[in-house]
Length: 464
Image (cartoon, rainbow, N blue to C red; front, side, top):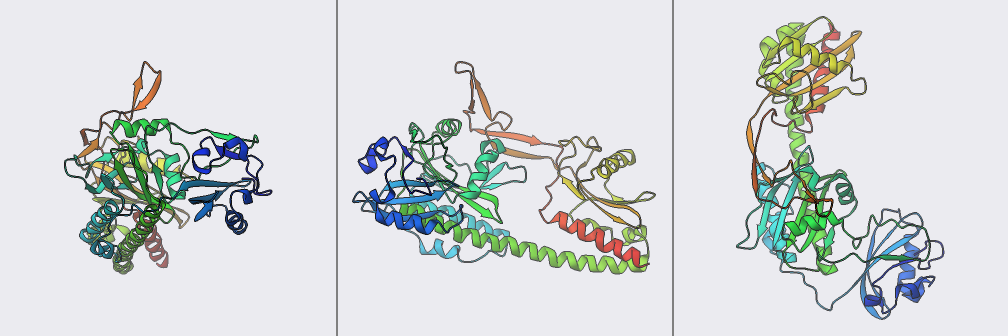
């Protein structure tokens, strides 16, 4: 619908099934033809930001409908769903609802929160399987909680490669509170237009789905899905993925209630993550204060490391540490050979656009020191003090572990010779990868800790 004239410019080819009007007959019609109430809503939206989405129950042509209204620079985009007289909202356990009211204080309590969330969504929606999928730093994901019907195999703890949810899809999840696919085999409905101007369907829940993703669902045996993103600080922390093995449509009432409960979960999770960071901050500041006092007495880095090795390493849960400037290298613990360390230092100094870098795999990133037995990860930070770059390195040892994937992560697509196309993999059977050349991952607050360490310590050295 044109934002200036409030007349219809585009319509899906199936409007007759909802409005009893063919799409072409709607072009040029004013919004009041459909509903005076809708016209008032659009007048309200004129003063709202473009990423604001309105959802309302409105009578169109005398029929009760649920509208989801979004906008781009030139249009209002209206998703229309006919309302049934009865809601399909399932019974919600008060005990599970109560679990979402409090932020966990421990990893064990956080897991109970995860389990409660998927059980509650399954109760509400009736999907055959509900999973909580947590993204990893490399955007692969792991199923950390699951509620499912008896007789279904479990996906709990399985990992999925980043290519299963590509960046364009992740970006859309940050902007939208849910995504519904009622029938993975349903054909896309074309959008007809009275103009040549395209419309932006970013916030539309009825936009068609990528054929590759539909094939992906079919390869899993999934006929319908409902996805609810978990967004923390505008970043996609995870996804609640609901699967059904028959086509399934959700009522707007159930969808709205599910989104509400996920928001309660998000706030509880945010509180838990904030408490973890605050606990880490308090512990870090206590250690830094202790180290600063020792450095004032010791007067140099070598003496500090001799008496405080475990504190310095423990800041980042590392096994090796090196402090380098243009003439000295003060080091302790598990390190790459001197030649490899010097080469890594030269590489980092050449990175003029960054003051911190971290990786859990020198080998994967093809960095100096990658061939060192035992050492796999590094966090390095630099600061300009005393007329030169001061650099601090924390090294983590290699951890060999088995990762259990849903299918081979190295084959996210299969070549279809007959169709001359690529299609998503067909197997989601457990596939075990023995991962080498990686350390334990760094925490997201480790970079800040490293920065605090080098600034505090160099300030102490400048005092003397």
